[in-house]
Amino acid sequence: MAVPVLRDEDIEAVKSSVNMVQLAGQYGFRVNRSGFMVCPFHGDKNPSMKVYSGYSTRDGYHCYSCGAAGTIFSFVMRYEELDFEPAVRRIAGMFGIPISDGTEPTAEDKRRIADRRAEQERKRQQEEADRRAMIELSERIRLYESLMQGARPYGGLWCYLGNRLPVLQGEWEERFEAMKKQR
Image (cartoon, rainbow, N blue to C red; front, top):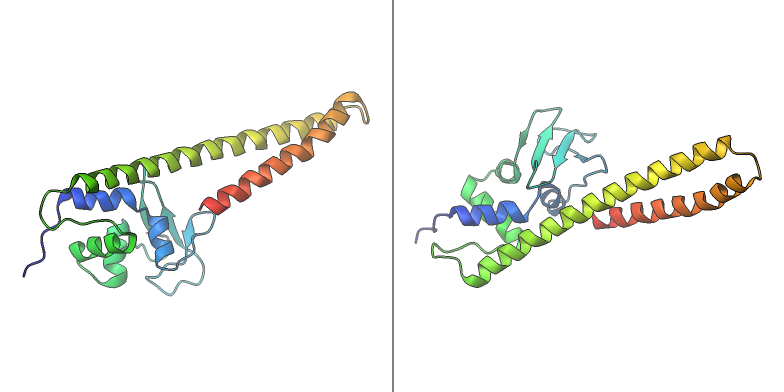
């Protein structure tokens, strides 16, 4: 019996549900904070493959040493030596994404796909909000430090800033740790 041909909706469901960072993690690769990992396509000792994750913007990978580049599908195709359809099915299986058997997707499948997309968008918005908050905290810390250097020692402003700085630095560290755990 022939395997049913993938529909565009199935490919779109996989593409919108899985990003390159998630896929790399599934294969056991560690992506560092800068978004780099060791390239599996050449004898890499130091991370030279940039991993991009963001369906709405840019998603995929590019190795600055060997030139390998592509999407989640081309990564699996090259890494596991598969054709396109088996690679899509492999990713779908790894992440529990339902692939149709050639029939129309059920209402439940459509709802699951929509829920996954909504969850990804919510996570993207949360990451953006966290990033903006970290930038604001960093700017406030730098401002307070520069104001403190110009303030009269043990004066009112100096004491206020001296009390606020550790609090802001603690907030920054807590947010940073929370963001690390989310990755």
